[in-house]
Each structure stands twice: as C-alpha cells, then as structure tokens.
Image (tube, rainbow over all chains, first blue to last red; front, side, top):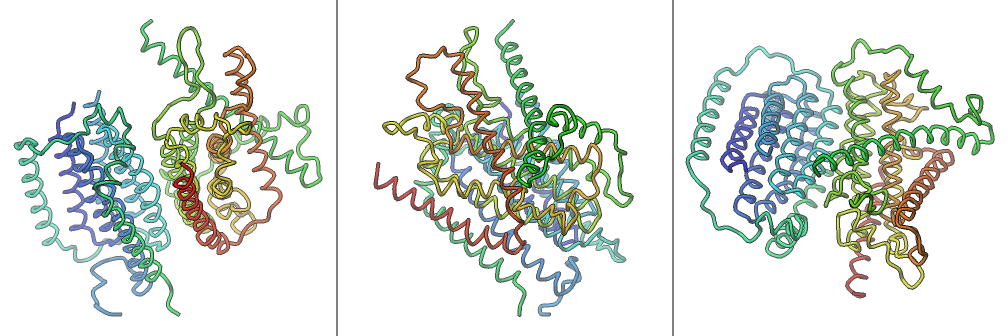
Length: 100
Length: 169
Length: 348
C-alpha cells in the first residue's frame, strides 16, 4: 500500500504549483484556475486522510469543497465577464480602479 | 501495482499542473487542468473513494471546466502578450517563498506519522456496505446541517451569477 | 490455464464483441437514418448500392477514407487533430457499463453480459457523457473559424444546461431502485405487480419524458442540434473537418445515440427483461440469448424513435432552447423528485 506521506507530498506539490500560478501569472482566468488547483490539492489530502484514518469525514469535506468550488466558479466567472465588458482586458494589473 | 499507478497518476498530475501555469494560452491551460483533475480522480479510486472520483469528473471536468472553457472562448483574449515590465521582483520573491513553503510541508509530511482517531469505516467495511451508501450514511446523519447550508450557498451562487452577468438596461 | 488468463480472455472477447456490435449498429443506423428520412419525406433515399441500399454505409466509408486529409492553415494543430479522436473514444468508453444480458452459465463459469460491472454505473456514464462535450468545444475553438466557434460555444452552454435536467430526471429511478448499479436497477424491474411488469416507465413516466428530451439534447440531434444547425452555422463545429476526422465525429455521434438508447432501455424499460417469460420452461442458454435479442430490439425501437423525431420536428431557436431547459425541464424534474419522495413516504 502506498504510504500516506506520498499522497500528502503530492498534495503539497500540487498546492505549491497552484500558489506559484497565482503569484506569477497576470491573466485573471489562469489565476482562477490556479486557485482551483489549490482547492483540488487540499481535496487530495482530505481523501488520503479519510482512507488512512478509516473514516469518511474527509470525503464529506471534499463533497462540500466541490459544492463551494462550483458556486465560486459561477460567481467568479460572472465577475470576470463583467470586468471584461468594462475594460476589455483580463490582465489584473490593468484592473486597478475601484470604480468604473 | 498500486504504487505504479500512484506514480503514473501523480507524475502526470504534477506535469500537467505545471503546464497549467506556464502555458500562454488559457484554453490550453484549461485542458491541462482537466487532465490534472482526471489524474486526481484516478488517485481517488486508488484511495477507495469511487463516489468522490465520479463526482470529481462530473463536477470538475464536466461542469466547472466546461464553464471555464466557455468563458475563455467567449472572451477570446487570445495569447497573452509579453509585457514590458515583468514584475521580476514579485515573481522571484513569490517563487522563493513557495519553495520554502513546499520544503516545510514536505519535511512535515515525511517526518510526522498519522495519529488521529480511527473511524469505523475500514476498507473491508466500506466494501461490504458499498462506498456510496457508507458516504451517504455519514453525510445525511452527522453532516446534515452542513449539507443543507451548502444548498443555500449554491442558491446564493446562482442568484449572484445571474445578477452579475445580466446586462444592465 | 490459470483463472486470471481465462478471465482476461473472456473480458477481451466481451470487449471485441461489444465494439463490433457498436460499429455494426452504427452501420445499420446510417442506412436506417437515410432510408428513414426518405420514407418520412416521401422519397426513396439511397437505394442503389447493394440490395435496397444496404451497402451504402460501406460506400460512404470508402469515400470518406479516400478524401484528402486537410488541415486549415490557421488551426491549432494538436487540438484540432485530437478533438475527433477524443470524441469517438469517449463515445465508445461510455458504453462499457451497460449490461446487455443476464448472467450466463457457460462451461461452469458465470459470465456477466456486461464489460464492467461498476457499483456506480450510472455515475460512470454521466461522468463520461459529460466529457464528450470537450470533443465538440475543442473542435470549435481549434478550427479557428467563426462558425466552428459559434457551434462550440452553443454546444457548451447547451450541454451544461441539459445535463442538469438529465441528471435530476433519473434521481426518481435511483430512489425507487435504491442503487447506482445498473444490474440492480434492472433486477428491480424484473418483478411484477400481479401481471404488469414493474418497469420504471410505469413508476416514473414524467422522469422518462424529461430524460428522453434531455437525451435528445445531449446527443445533439434535431430539434436540439443548435451546435450544428446547417442553415445558420453550416454544421458548426464540423465545418473544417473532412475525410476520416469527419468520419470519427459521425461514428461518435451514432455511438452516443446507441448508448443513450441503451440507457433509456436499462433505466425505464427493464433492460434485457422479457415480461412473462419466467413461467415458460426455456433452456437457460436459449433464455439468455433471447434476452440479448430483446435488449437489441428495444434499443433499436428507440433508435428508430430518434430518427422519427429528427425528420419530423423543426429546430428550436437558441433562446427557446435555453428557456425550455431551465424553466420547463428543470422545475419538472425537481417536481418529479418531490412527488416520488412523497409517494415513497406514504406507501412504504
């Protein structure tokens, strides 16, 4: 059986890649995808813990995280469409006004 | 066998996650992200969480990423132009801190062993009652209120998206 | 030989037979579609190649095979080439969990007439069916053509909308069947109420209707073929595809059609179950064969229904399509779940 630490390490690596993505990319869509990647990395560690602790709470949490992610994506993409409509850009450096 | 599958899924997941953040084209990013999710679903099957694996594909690959691809195509931003100033300071600091963070997490996961309280759902027990039934029995008893609250959150999400995306007249 | 190898060989035989049956079904469907269109429109249809035109699909295949392989200059090549293969692959893989017959005792071994008996069979089908849309969307985007892009966008929005209704419409069946395994769902339907077989169509007529409509939308056929729409989008996402790449889409579409027909039969019409046959004393092998034949006959009945609908109804307008999906089908599906729940509480 694959030890728990392997899964956690993989999860940590995926999370870090997502974090790098948010930090180095300026395209708001790709930043958003990186956030999804980070959520999924956390999900992986939840499922791994649930398997190695013989309990299903971890999977229930993943279920809830998925529902939150779905709602988040719907609202987030709607916001991005609004921004694009106003400013015709998806570069976060150019989205620097509080209003307008 | 299990280790081989783990290595394959893990390697593909990491490689495609890397492609997500380096690709210049958002559509290609989105497709690599789908590949990552697919590998994660494979890992969930290895971890005896078949129901979550199916949900991962239905919700993430089948719904969320379709929405992403739809918006990327709708906006038609094309390739990201290389820009004059490139935020070298921010990027290098960011990468350094993320690497440190990764080292921290990695050392913790390799050194510490799991000490939590064990639950009743061993692999044998879950196989006996079925993964979906076991999952449902936990979700609809101990976690009924979170489940109900999440439905309110989803409703709020629907209304929010409709209000935001609607053209003002 | 060790049991492992025997199992492997049985599995391989099953995969080959099912693949062959699907391809054969597609070939038959090509003829049925074209001759059926002719029949409905009061003309002959293709009747020159072979007896009654039955060799027409072979002629079509040879024609497509010999066409020039064409790649548009501005296309995004890797995705442009991968999209049709992905679409066809997903279409074939989806069929893997459909049971086409009961267990058979052969040479002292019990053989399940199904490629993979997954305990979350329904979810498996939904997972893969929802991936099929990428084959269309990516084709639309990578062809770098306005009509293609429009087709891809329409398809993405349509698939998301109708998948919701499709998923909710079978919740009633799952509530009655108490299982996600397709074999268990069929097992429930082999029982009787006095003389009436307990098929889900009698318990869930509304669910069946919603599922049928949403299934037509999922396989992109008239009246919901907005992503192809010859008259406005000159076949949408397929504009830039020719020769074998077009043939792959063709194959994938008809395979999807067969899969959804089979799913309707499994969920609502008892799968391979033949009513009132248990009383007759038939040899088990013959019975198994008859059940497979019954399954195929039921599937073809629905395939013909799809052809009938396609050549009878006009196409929806896009806003009508969306309005219908979200404001009619979705509330009806939720109402169906509610009623099923109430009835199940009242009548234990």
